[in-house]
Image (cartoon, rainbow, N blue to C red; front, top):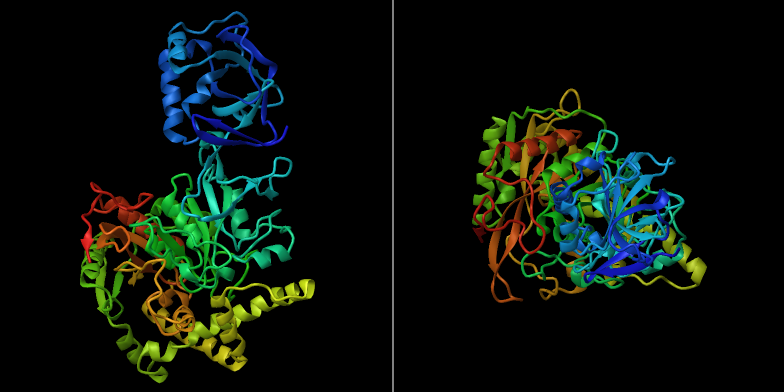
Length: 628
């Protein structure tokens, strides 16, 4: 049997090539419908499981079907065309309750059968839900969703014969399995059945990696191993349903800079705002689609932090080295991290608990100090700061901590007097020199491999070529100086957010501005030349995100509210998300996530999750929008 495509009620479904279940004695005994009804191959069917035929009546059936539909976006009414009732040890001549017949007629059910499990399967192997039926065998139903924001480069599926091996189903859209096929989350499988997308810099066994470059994808064969972080997700029960787009080699382009592929769209507001930098595909699918639960990205100097903020989702950049980057296409070993992107703090914490080192987060706040760097917030709109200050005040109440306004430059002068008057002065080239130097040298090997194989230079985005030109000219001495400056800044941050004696508990946090307070359109050029625009994206200078990037501290982007703006595209008022960053001491990752989770649990004025689509928060949610 080959993989097939079927449409039910105008909804497309993908049917994998291999059936996954069969029954003892085929379809068993028919208990409803015409005996002459001939089931066509790939007939839609619903499998229901009961322990005793006496439990099965109209009320049970309605309640069961309603329950299945309430938790699953794959299960649809047309699957009720054929009903399979799995009831162990059913008496040979047992009949179904008469109340079912009228329900079957109302729902358009044509046949119903009592089926028996095969001895080779355990009863738990038979999951109630939607299937396609051929000759008494069941195949899974994977609903195909349209990728309306162009977030994905392709869908992925685990192979039937080797679940560790993946392949790309050759279809348009993203097929996802029924949520009903998976057990409830458990300590051994805490992510059971969650649908997860991964940025296409993570290797996936059996699939070529593109890293946003068609030349790179064509050069190397299918990967022999899966990236370690992705494998941890799979081992915890996660289902990898696709790889998301990224700028070439995760190198920080904006929408107008993409050449090989179309940049993903930001679903928020008018739908034509820039979607952020290299982890934009992962952010876009989380912000746009309920059928995706979470995504993995990578963050070198803001590539999770920023797309999460502009698309109004949770974005977690962990402490440097806290999550393994093995099996990813690197930008800079000195800066690269694996990042988590989700619509709720609960799920962010849940995934963090899988990927982060095995420590136990406190169930109550141990925070004593909350720092508010007023100099970093000074550049933001007053209305943005008003909303963030409200949030910080509520956070302080929850934590029962002291809020301290600080000026980072003044702290720098007092603590690091030998290193210049301002952080921006001392650190002006540090981030840029490190990532440019590493990016060029990490890219050189594949560039040389491509030329050796083809006799031609690989096609590369103008933005990336500019970046390589800068990186090539940075000397080893300049790189060493930049690394030394990073170490100095990390020591400075330790004096403000010190690591606890046990290395993981949390006594101090810092809030930082992140995201935009006005529209930034995906088509805008702002009169810049390529060099000027690209230079702005290389990490020169110092801004809030570099608190975490240059020190290795964990950062969580948190959606707080939203603001209104007059769209130049739709010419009506739209809303965009308003976010803040929360930074903890290095190594406090799980404690930081648990702290923020605890705040939302204890503070009904704020909502610890966001919606998909145009607005992260909707009328009737916790807060009125800010006006910026």
